[in-house]
Length: 320
Image 1 (cartoon, rainbow, N blue to C red):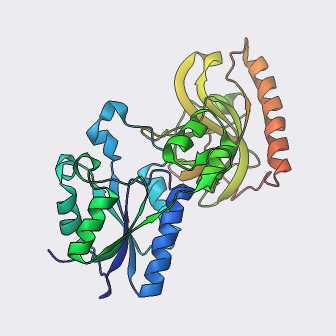
Image 2 (image 1 turned 120 degrees about the vertical axis):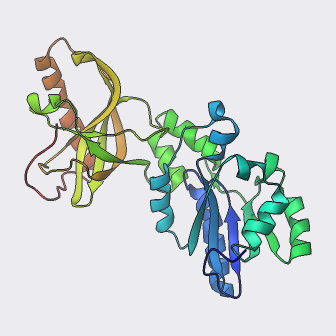
Image 3 (image 1 turned 135 degrees about the vertical axis):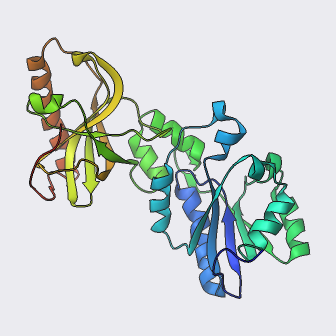
């Protein structure tokens, strides 16, 4: 089998894993392989998987995604990696013994000369490809195996995807940002809604919730929204809309100082601070009054962080 990537003659430095979240622990591994590759004239290669392996191994127990496939690819593109090789995880790949995975994929396809992994790493059928086995294989096949120690947070301890999911699910946005090394965000397209917000003077953009994407608890939030034409602060209603008897979980964001056309556009939404729980109001007038208070609270939060109104292009409005 010929190499699937234009790997230099010196070979590559490889790491393997799910890398859901691309958190600080993952970034430490990526920093290590890119530094080693630069020092040796090799290529740095991340070998990862879609869908998440647990969706195939045990779908009922598969965790919600910290990053969707599109989000993860965007984050990886901003690292120093030479290549991110995304393998389709299916029944055949699940059944592949670790020896075959190393020989057929890591060595033959990617020219691996160094393998760098986290200390809890395992891959291949039943995660049987542990560090000891890999080092034995490396001695026979001419590659080295090194382990990157875990990154620790002063509060959460070892930085892990499990701990990060707990922080997000509990609404601890500050801890989640610290474990990620960046704010927790969602990237999604703007879709058409029922246009109720426009009818009460608070137009919103409606976002499609990505499949299996982990979200913080429902509520009203101060947010930042970025798109190809600009960025703006705003307020978000995440969850049902009990005042209008709509129990669907939705994401509706009102952008401050913006009146542009975003239908079909992809935007990145950052949860900044939770303002309140979802509530049912007795009338639309009562809802409108609360939204005015929410807007003032959201602006205060954003202004305190130096990120208030920063509108992008102006023009035709197609918010709901």
